[in-house]
View 1 (tube, rainbow, N blue to C red):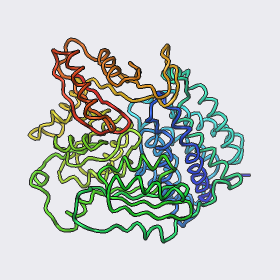
View 2 (tube, helix red, strand yellow):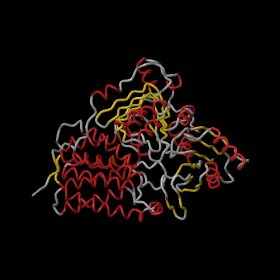
View 3 (cartoon, rainbow, N blue to C red):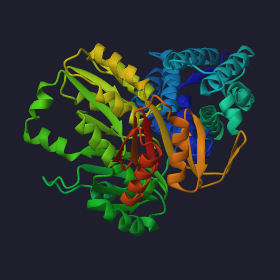
View 4 (cartoon, one colour):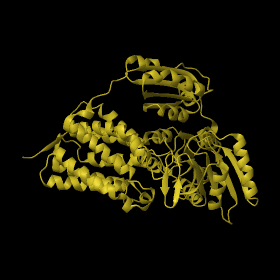
Length: 536
């Protein structure tokens, strides 16, 4: 007897998958190769799934074609980070074969997983085995084998998940960096968590119970006063899922970060509205209490210009090529603006903006052509996805760090063509060395190096190159690994929480250690990293 997969079953798969990755996102985050506080694979996959489900909830039809189209659209626009973009491409490939269909057979569903894997591999410039891609390929093979034995959907998923875990356990043998860190692949684990949640929802519906929705009072509580005082630039609104009794404490802390503070709570959700210059700090603080939902950040000055008919300044109006850059930290964002970026997207490590934010920033850039600087290795795929969704000439400069993006922007020449600037800026990326100072979030053994929780660590060329208890000592130890005889300039970007006195003391120590080099410093205010360092 032929077995079928319906639109309702696909909905349950997504609802269950979302609930599971929400529950296990911290576990997935903890599988980061380095024991640093920027593991965000689980969070990115959760937010991507949440965007897919948000679109699914708008679909009243039960046919599998409409359900699949909504999931693909939502996941694409909400994709965050490499893991989120790959997940969105898996969803896209899976749902491409569902278009205009009422339902499909189980073997057809298994066949669509083959297309899903092909789509995901195409999305990655240089696919690497031992990653989420390998686990996805193993899942597809497991489904194909089960479908050939005429198994029903739930049994097929069970067999595929079992095969996926067998492959996941082998990922350290396929990818040396995983073996060295003693972890399995985070993206592969996240994918299996999502499928397990979907299987649970199909089997007993445990993950499909809708959580209590916010009451109308919460939504009304967030209506902000409108004015033209731009002391604070960003209107930041979101739902915090946490114990409502925490509302008073959260509000008291956030009041020091901005103005026009409004909160309301109901049903396990706290609605927060604040005008601030540091939305990243607000979100990071609240994330310590629970999970964040329906995040919305608007530049109030941009809104005022649009609503009042205010003219863009002459530079913006006449630009042939506009620059869009990603940055976190007030100093970093201001530096990009000073160097000519028309739009700066708030984001970076631990806060990966989705594809939709790239699309919106590009569309709001008043120039015929656009250059995009993602400034983080996890954002390059999202930027490239946005490039395909906007109808104008766009080039993505594959900058993997803030210092690299700044260095590339320094050689931008508005008298050159888009292609000439792309080549010039990409060459500049090869001329810069970047180091990062952060801290370990857990004890770890990396090769022969033993790292203790909370110990300061210096990262260079994908390796932990220095460790210690003093910012000054770790900066100097890291520079020993970075600087060679041909270098001319060292630049230090101090992060959030680094005092001016500490930054000045370290600057003088670096000048003493490298008297023949020019040494520069900026207060970036970036989260997570005490110092970003560039050598060129």
